Image (cartoon, rainbow, N blue to C red; front, side, top):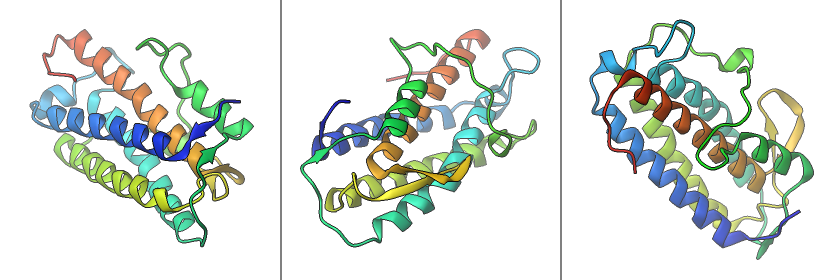
Length: 191
């Protein structure tokens, strides 16, 4: 299992979230009709992908905030847990591609009809909250604090692993968004 410098890990995650926030702002500038267009029957449109990410933010952001209210001091080194490392590696795109397809858990499946501007505004707001939580985490021991996962509150990940998983999950779905827009022939400036 790799060891991470805690502050460097949080800085790297902050940079990733900042990048995706800017990409979401670019997406929000696209016409809503493009954001609601499915690339094929039964495939998610951009708004549905963003709403799927919103469902994770609605669960994890309050849980992370609650964990950060626990007393403690930062530790210089973060050692991922077995589950956290497994879930993160399972989600993370490899070489800019999503290798393994997964079915979204029932509570994280988006509705077919969405108002794209509101969905993207909620996602951007969630990203801004996540950036603040990453900053707050600099004062915490991200290896000791625990966050229950969304599909089973009995399984808890280290806070550092929760951040890693959440960001890897978002990266995975931004690859999906890029693929959707490419299939539809929609131009957008991705950083």
